[in-house]
Image 1 (tube, helix red, strand yellow):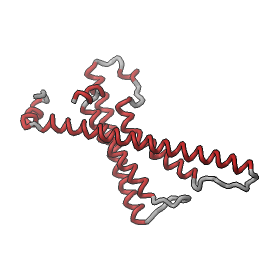
Image 2 (cartoon, rainbow, N blue to C red; image 1 turned 90 degrees about the vertical axis):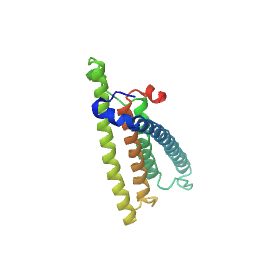
Image 3 (cartoon, rainbow, N blue to C red; image 1 turned 180 degrees about the horizontal axis):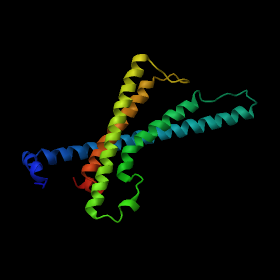
Image 4 (tube, rainbow, N blue to C red; image 1 turned 180 degrees about the vertical axis):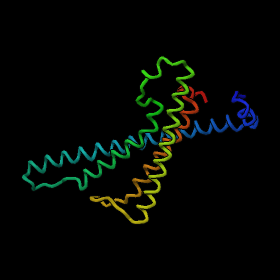
Length: 189
């Protein structure tokens, strides 16, 4: 068994700590891969909308406004696609490395570096949970009011729900990173 201190030893005897850690790591991997797929899809959509609109603008200008193939609500579509891309990419960026300031921790002892990394991921976990709650509440409110986007009239609760799920995934991956700070260890579990 693992050495968790006096309290942790009693819990570890029951076998819950290693099993919970395994479930968190497995869940974090699934969340990370799922969010990465969503981020890639949203990015491809974003690039497609922008490229189509640029080409349509060329035809529009060359035809002296007779050929109007402009994508309806392209700017709004691109904005929401970018929003989804950024939030969905956050969970997978934790494993590959968020921007960090190593100059502050480089000279610290190894245990202090691990503590600082775990503290950072717990703070990120709290932020992700707060954002998930706020986005979730806004999704419920937008659903209740029937709010839609301005140009394409898509229901707003869908975007808030997607952001809520992305923040939940970020919270799970942050928890995993706090418990297992080295990404190489994720594979070993």
